Image (cartoon, rainbow, N blue to C red; front, side):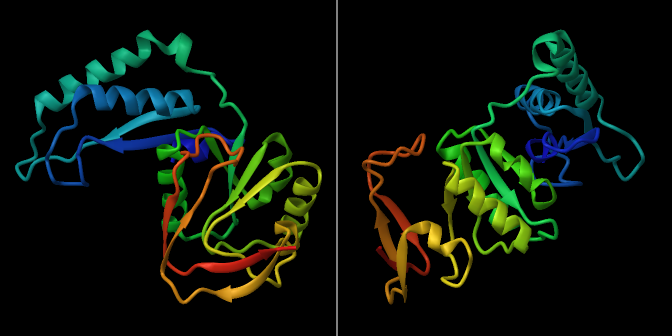
Length: 220
């Protein structure tokens, strides 16, 4: 969430919780994990907030608040080197303004983490800022308006790279940018992507296993 918020022009407050899974499970994250989360929020320009929940008798856990204090003190002591930093603007994930598909964004986030990509999120209303980046990613199945599609096309024609996951409608204005001809979907549900020779950062040199519907395309 803080990664998304850092590209917005407004002040943000980012909340985490002391629990592992969610409200009320009464677990307590290690101090090291809290230090990492608070540092990340601060580095992304957010105000740190952490959530707790009272016991049924109205009491709180003293141990939890001792850990909160240790984690916040850790960030305060390093604020000079954490706060006010900016990300390296290389890769951006594009998000429609009305996006409600957390699964698509979570899929991109997992991919970025596994590939060790430094990536931003950019909403459709800020699409003109796409030119600040080298690679733009369209996650699975997200739909964009005409202005956004035209801007993305302009970005590619001016040398930007575009990575589309989840397939692309052959009638989309972006399809011609792929330099390919569509032959529909494969009857097979699994396949491999050979990344050898690709200049995308962080891709392993071994074939990547793909699952789900596979689009059949032919270079033109």
